[in-house]
Amino acid sequence: MRYLTQWFKRYFSDPEVVFLTIFLLILFAVVLTMGDMLAPVLASLVIAYLLEGLVGMIERKRIPRFIAVSVVYLAFLLFVTLLLFVVMPQLYRQLTELFQQIPLMITEGQKLLMQLPQHYPEFISPDEVQEIIASIRQEIAELGQTLVSISFSSVVGVITVLVYLILMPLLVFFFLKDKRLILNYLLGFLPRDRRLADTVWRDMDRQIANYVRGKFWEIVIVWGVSSFVFSVLGLQYAVLLGVLVGLSVIIPYIGAAVVTFPVILIAWFQWGWGSEFITLTVAYFIIQILDGNVLVPVLFSEAVNLHPVAIIVAILVFGGLWGLWGVFFAIPLATLVQAIISAWPTVDTLDIQKQS
Image 1 (cartoon, rainbow, N blue to C red):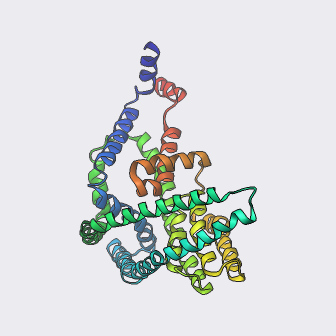
Image 2 (image 1 turned 45 degrees about the horizontal axis):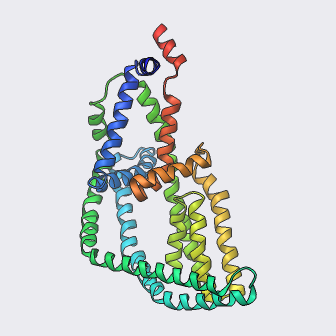
Image 3 (image 1 turned 45 degrees about the vertical axis):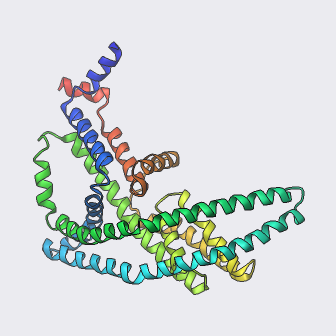
């Protein structure tokens, strides 16, 4: 107990450390307990943060902020309109067609599985094939029940989407227009001596701005290129699969591996082992290689210095806490933790501060 008391006094004797600790705990508690209620505000804040980079770029050309905000905001509304009235109807149509084709795909898959014991009797038996087919049918039945339950709650979902469509654009506009006013108001609650918090914020802001904005453009570019390539090659559900490939970049390592399965599977059901299947597979892996070796270095001006194990752990932890938002912000949040650890006063720095 004495050693614990000494450790606490040594590291928490600095008021800045105490303030930063309390602030982080309060922020974490608010997001964890009221995250669902504040979801529109948090989502709007993220969108405004993404758009702030474009606003700052226009402002650097000596254009007034209000004009810069108006131009970027109108471009944002145009982008959202295209998503709602051009992309979403295609996604819905292709998703409906895919669900209608699932029974045929299952039948073809069963025929393929039934042939395995004939060609590879030493590896798999007919009984094992029957067990695999039974488990697949059970999973499909559970999926059907899930879709039915979702359809019953669709009315609530539609109302929620309508509220978001009205509320979030307003919040985004005010976050952009009154950025300085809001920041000055919040800074009024903070102590004047906040060197440690300022150090953490500068490091975090640089890393998160680089990551989030770069990741957004990576999603859009990979999505667009994949949809275009799939459409040119004649792959069914090209827009739907392109969206999946674009969203897969959110989760490093895991996302690309997971989304490969539906792309290759749908291509095989459409063409079999023909030249079209090989061409599609080669094109898909070229997209993945160019994304990892060309696009990412161009978009991310600063490398995120996190070990792959730390990235995977961050995805699991924050994804379990906050769902999709936690997955998207897993690396920025892990970077925040790293920034706090790097800026946290060590024993030597605390001793120097006391002597000075």
